[in-house]
Image (tube, rainbow, N blue to C red; front, top):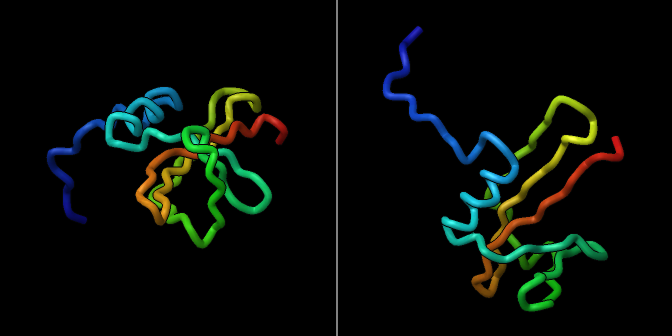
Length: 92
């Protein structure tokens, strides 16, 4: 099996807050809330259907207990918006 060299640490994946901050730094500045089968931007209050967004990346975080579970999804909208959907999953 080959070796992997020059592995860089990815600090933005160490915690939820680091991931959110890293996303903002790379241009994903809007926050979106899931609503009625789509998403609402908290910046523009515009509603987007699933067909109007593209999922760029999804990250799942698990802590030491059941209340430390979260999903972060990076999305882009068809009109140029970029942001995150944050879901805290403490009802598992």
